[in-house]
Image 1 (cartoon, rainbow, N blue to C red):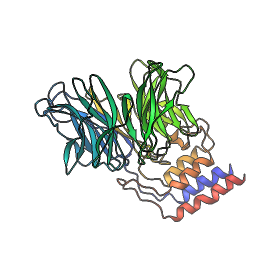
Image 2: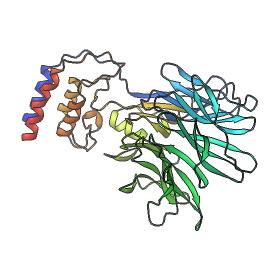
Image 3: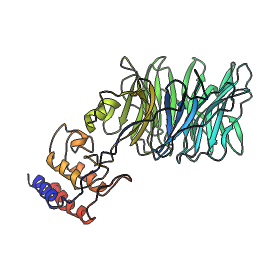
Image 4: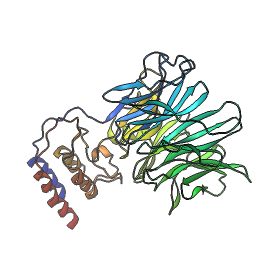
Length: 435
């Protein structure tokens, strides 16, 4: 009681903030390119969450085809074109950390090819592996954080192989049989999947320049197949699936600890935050696909019910089908859903900053007031002060608030109390720890 009283008194003492602005976090539908049937799909996001890439219908693509796009808050959605203007088609799959390099696939006169796009150089075809067969194709699926290395799959009707491309070395095979590269770390660790024989099945792999291709195995007894889908920038964590045929489970994998299942549901993880603590993807457990969010502190939940329960957002008219990408800090999530137009549309979700319980874009005394009024409450949602997600509002949540006190979103107009206000939090924190 003494601790809670101290907090409430502190709120009264320093309640000097200006009226907060409209809540900054939320969901934004990204629209689509002009022309064509309404459609857009997001597949990648920059480290800071400010740049999103994907594909959209457009006037240039016409019916049944798509055009790769890049989206920013300042410039909106911009088409990247296609290297075949007759059979126009292109898709963007990933973007570098700073948002300057986009990769994907485009039609060309010779067939589908992987591309790398920059603002200054435009769309560049990356070539084709010398694999025989009809219908040669290629697809860039990931790019290194600095944009220098592109990985993907290249092949034809008789087979395909994982590749890596650099400006100096061009396109080169990573080996494997019917293999595909799907992610790359800043240090050059590449992940993907490959076919193995005896018995015929697929396995997730890691690849390095020094060690070549190494299989990562299976998550559970009885599993027959696995795939590696993504990797953190530092190469510490890998995400993917493991299962038997069409019955698979999502996992997070680490070299030392091995497999960690994200949940006992059929789901596919698409992206992971820089520190490995947040993973997003799609769950196939309901009648329709559903975007999911997994956190190391709280486990796997449906993204839509999570946003409604934790932040009080009105989710009635939102259908979030899959979450395909996340920013480095896990706060910005891109994906696809059924938007206001009733059609598939790319979205961007910006989760609140840690401890911004009032959702006004600034961590200040108003957030302390929320925590104080709910202190000791069990089963509290995030918006009522449970910033750690452990189910209770306590001193740990005050620690989160104290460490973030004074943060302000670039778009916020709220005034922040003097830094000395933070010092007033510390006596209350100490009182609780001594009690």
